[in-house]
Length: 313
Image 1 (cartoon, rainbow, N blue to C red):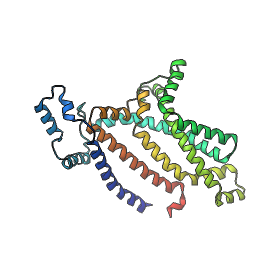
Image 2 (cartoon, rainbow, N blue to C red; image 1 turned 90 degrees about the vertical axis):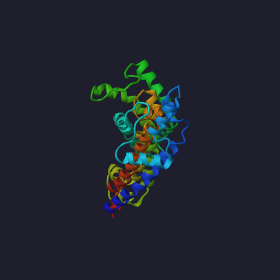
Image 3 (cartoon, one colour; image 1 turned 135 degrees about the vertical axis):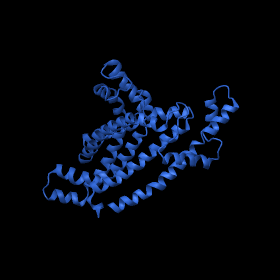
């Protein structure tokens, strides 16, 4: 396992370098000149020249990439051209909000999707199976923004149980924070739960027909032990992979859901940065998101050793 970890860590560096090159290169394809945008309506040539020199926009593309990478290595992701704040500070401001929303949504997805998939596979062809498949179809086909609007109309406008939008820090008001995050977490978790349910059902159906499951039943073990200890544990490998990818998607920011519920997370930050041609913020957020995906995949690979003892050999 230790040798495997070293090999995976060694492969992270070239992956990050390639990702950084793609992020920086594709960023340059965005239309508009940040220096002209910052210069205002007057478009003073001297001001534009000063801004281009300050932002290294007058340098060749490889030189600008070198400046950016050198700053990233030192922990400097650049400075926002709109707010004049360090990009790292902006990310750290939005990270707790997005992290909380992602964790809550992922908990909703896991608590609904995996049990539904297990029940659907065990009771194949029954009413439970049809109901779980109907739920998965509904979750996959329902747009997040539409479901969010319906929940706001029901629980905020009609019943008045939950706030329609906004964000409250859990350190200021924990009850208010959970009330504000309940609907967006369910909206995001609902779609992921449907995906987890389908993958869990498929993996469980494949495992339930295995020889070691039949042997466990022949030994007289209870059905609960056979399903949870023998079948589910061996079916978790593809579910872990999917869960890592979905959690990475949540951490990258849910743009539409954050806009509907007015949550100041990564989604709003990246949208504002793109519209304002704030290159440094876009590059910093995308690089953070890509690094998060790589880290989550590494953790998923390590989790395989925990759930499947055969891989430890």
